[in-house]
Image 1 (cartoon, rainbow, N blue to C red):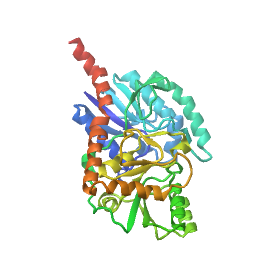
Image 2: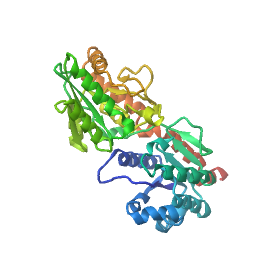
Image 3: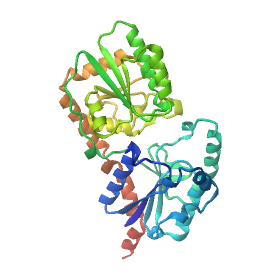
Length: 375
């Protein structure tokens, strides 16, 4: 069997971001399952104004750039965002000239609340119109939600995964009485809700503190200006550190100093109440406890290394976070704790496990499989 993994909106190979790591891991899983899989990055033509216009008016725009062996594939696994005219044209051409199954992965659904700004209404309206055509061409939609159908197309329900083998377990000392380091890694957006964390830290330092608490923000994004403004307003510069974008050894160094990590605290702001975000997987693979407001799909209710905070806009109670962590380290050495969390990640979050439903679908529904059955 052979196929293409297609990306339709920008990723950053140079920055080695989480999305790019995920795509690489998914391709490795497909290859390890016996599928000859090539990457086709259609997003590389999306940067210029000309290309942005072309993809929205020219249904043949992408078909002009496809490889010679494109239509002879058994499957097309497509990382999908929102609809454009050229995407519909690509799917139509696959069904007309090819034989393979089209599987779309939608990283977020519903996703309309992620769009902000003056052009958001136009983007949403365009997507609502074009998405109605998807059912003509798409065989399955891979979703991290609980929807059995999306756009009237049957879904394959999975959870987000990572390649645990590429992520080192933290190497740190046990709990240090003098301070707690809280780390959040993201492309900071409104729905991450980390303003709640800063507001909570401000409330914490207004009282008689039990120990010092530091917050480390790693990444960039539109909300950084707001976070910086709050930190200056509250005079918290000593306790809130902005590291910018970090990768590899530099990122590992921050995690090695961390005691607690932070998932999204504002999923409710975009109507998301079940999270499958990649950061929760990386925190687990690193072997670190975490806090979150949105329920994390892979974590069972009795998982003692995750603290859920209220799903609203209230400041995070830092005293509660400290007590959560103290209760953990009072029972076991941190090296044991990190090993248990890492083991949980390998058993539940590794890409080889999370992609099984997709592998099964492609294996049982490919043109190759149908030929084998006839024989």
